[in-house]
Image (cartoon, rainbow, N blue to C red; front, top):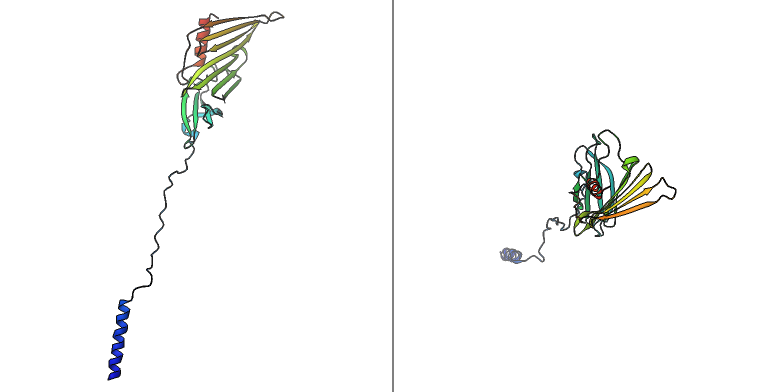
Amino acid sequence: MKQTIFSISMLCFLLGSCKNDKPIAEVTKPQPKVAKENPNPPQIQNDIHEYIPEGFEIQYECDGDLNQDGLKDYAYVLRNIEDDTMARKTLVFFGDKEKGRQLFQQSELVFPVEYSDEGYKIYDSETISIEENQLMMELSGLGPSGTTTIIFQFENGGLFLKSMESFHAGAGGQTIASYEVMTGKIEMTQVNTMKEDMPSETEVKNFAPLKLAFEKVNPMELFDQQILKFGF
């Protein structure tokens, strides 16, 4: 009997001890990993083809630091695939650290048409380039086409027509013309190639200075108008 009472007492003591025991250490449940958002996600460089209208393709392209900010800038000339007598488009992009490139200006006037309405190619050689803060276009052909250089200059956040030069050679003479658009100065030189010493005569006239934006000016048309005013 005493042994039975003792066994029951020990059982109660053990049960009470188990009930009051505290765990030695709390078990921490693993937390699910949450993906952190990148505060500076990588940017995808703009695709130039997003800016090419249907039916057009890139004919010429160049790059350089036009706005002098240390990033590469770009210029493209687009032509119509079906009709080579249509106006060509010129697009200028600035380099952008986040976007790759950003459209700055565009024009359908600055680069002349490739073929005449009669189907003749106007210039045999055409180039576009960026040199320092200037966008240059050089056009060269035989006969009446001659050679023309058009220069736009980036300044004060804009792109403006700076100057034009032309050279034409014909029977018995050569004509060299230069037009400083921003100052209004036009210089015309005529060379007599019929004489052995090829004498030349230069005349200078000054017109009103102009500040003409890239997207609004037709350089070739302006040059022709100013030459007519000059009296040539």
